[in-house]
Length: 489
Image (spheres, one colour):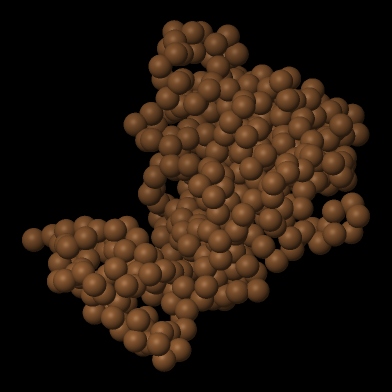
């Protein structure tokens, strides 16, 4: 007989520590009670943690309740506090700044009200130093997608990094004519079938290079150690939603990319992140941040971790490892396909767009720059800004605009929600669009249709002062998760 879900779950010490408990004996008592209640199905995990949080704030109501499940714990805490022995980390309540600081917005006419409201809330955080909103911005959790937020140097906001940590673009340029997408369509399609894997929980069994897992960082923290096997099994795979691997035609202007003559080339473009590893890290430390840093309801997802504390350092280590892992994921895909093509790429260009970096503002202030769905665009920095499955993407060089905190958009940005796409878009119109643009589509569904996205040309025009366009990528053979796979990001 299979154990039920409650029997499988466990209230971890880290989750209890996130409530503010740092005394070993108290931690043991809380763990015993919490996991006893969970094991016997008295309450589910969220209920248990909510009660324990309330008990720590005020144990008296629990101590007075006859037959209460937490009565003994509450009485113990009251006695310990009388003797000054209950050592707990104080959870701090923070107020937002009363005035909204100015922040620049690119392409204001393309941005929904909800995203602007979220950015206005973010800039009022007591740790906020500067912010900017990119023209592809739309509403997300906490910080809007397309939002850039610089906070004090020792703070980091998990939800301002994003759930898919280090979501990333990668482009391989091959010394083959762009016409190969028409003359070798079946061959290129088969390469995508053979060497790409999409979906929640999908795994691979063969690897081109798994040396990243030799890194000692995988043993740095308990959370990372617990996720190593999952990460290894998913190396070289892609998620759902807007993740893709596609062949296309890359047009490069004269002198734009050093060492590559002007012309039209076959290129491979991919978009995905750190898979279940990054998602688990994000969820774990977001909960800790929200329990440590109490904010008003409209800002609760913008809770931060202190890099001077253990949990902040743990997240920083895990986030950076997720960045290396996301890069390795793309390299697995590109290297396997390059091997099948029997040709090394002329150049590979890549960048994160869900990450946090330690940087300096123009005035020299040290900050933590969160780019949630925003491309690094420091002076001379190369990046990729994709459109949709039937509209072009662009290879760009950053201009180092200090007002945008050295950032640009990460794509076209959604014009409508996924649910709205399913309700309003027409399948026949989508099919006609793909035929007109000569797109071979493998997988996907209506929520990723080109019409669900903003006009990439308008988005690029709105940020001409942030990036210089070096090359244009026209997608032609597009592989995404099957329609039955629901987005995980």
